[in-house]
Image 1: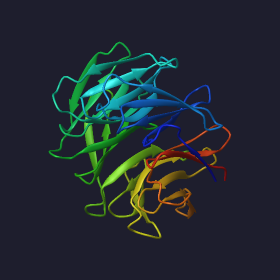
Image 2 (image 1 turned 90 degrees about the vertical axis):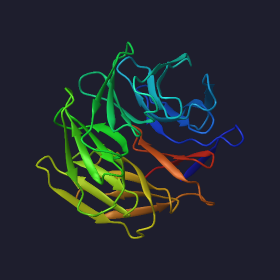
Image 3 (image 1 turned 45 degrees about the vertical axis):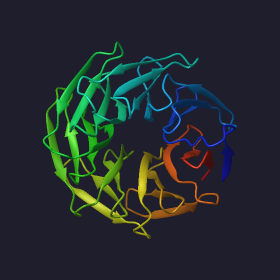
Image 4 (image 1 turned 120 degrees about the vertical axis):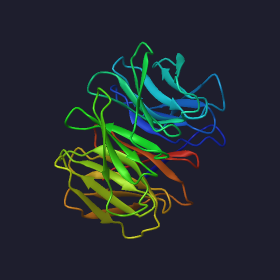
Length: 290
């Protein structure tokens, strides 16, 4: 395990993604900054137009730019590899955009936590919003599925949502009540894998609608983000236990401690060399080579 402290005092990364050139990009939700990181741990920081905009989840767009949600000012941000940034305002006020992903249709899709909506954003900044069949569902992370649809967690509705690219939504209720799903990803097995932060479990939704849940060794570990392992299974963060975990398609779990003291691990990504990178909100990036 290697840890790379960031040079800026008090700055803590929240979300991570891997660019097509192999670099890493991170958001700093409390400081209004985006960083480009090389694999030796060096960082270039870009300050956005508002320190309080709350950049949250980040993903690579079809235009090779990085797209991210701005939680506190109701915008979707875009930044190029040389640090040029702009943003687009959501039509519905106070949407609190959070999760964002690239859909199979070439558009960006994001969740609006406050308004029970999912928004489709083109690279030109055209935005279309689609309602979810919930009230106070708190849609969180979102990711493309193997069937061309988008899958998202509904943290307060205790369900996994599926939305087609024309805006038709269906829900898959979770077996465990008040499980609090957050991170979600498509596994290499084609199933949708997600974490349940309140229940301390990892869940799996197959394409035929069957849901399995796998309890973690410590149910209060508060799993947060999850990403596929190219070799099979998924990697996830345990925010409440300062650990990274790996789960196989069969549900076998291995846990790995992060450097002390507690780093508050959130975002996680895997690079093409198999290394696992973790954003520690306490102010570092950690790397694990299995």
